[in-house]
Image 1 (cartoon, one colour):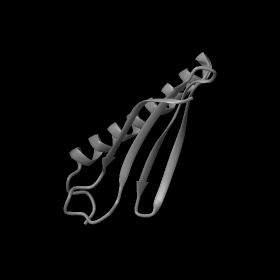
Image 2 (image 1 turned 90 degrees about the vertical axis):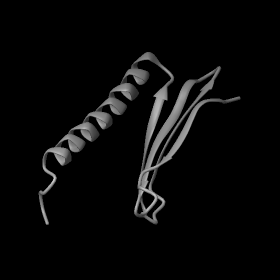
Image 3 (image 1 turned 60 degrees about the vertical axis):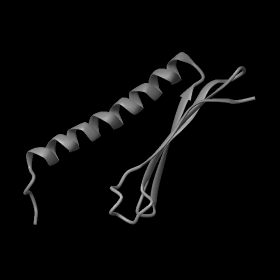
Amino acid sequence: MDKIVYRKRRWLNTPAHQTTAFIRGELSTDPDYGIDGSLTISDCGRQITLDIDGSTHQRRNNSIRKLTTVRDVCDEMIAYLKQHPKAGK
């Protein structure tokens, strides 16, 4: 039977925004399969779910790379927005 070892859900928008944008991460372990999980990002009716597979060393490393790449792109976008506060209208 799966045992949930990590579960976190956070709202993405400030309280002033009346939307249900969220990010949710979940990892579980199974004695026969290993680690399994997902990362879901939802905003404005759109949703993406990334599969997180830790059943083998190779799949675990691929999941780490996938999450690291998402984090790196987010960090780069944040840096750009901070450096260009008046870009656009």
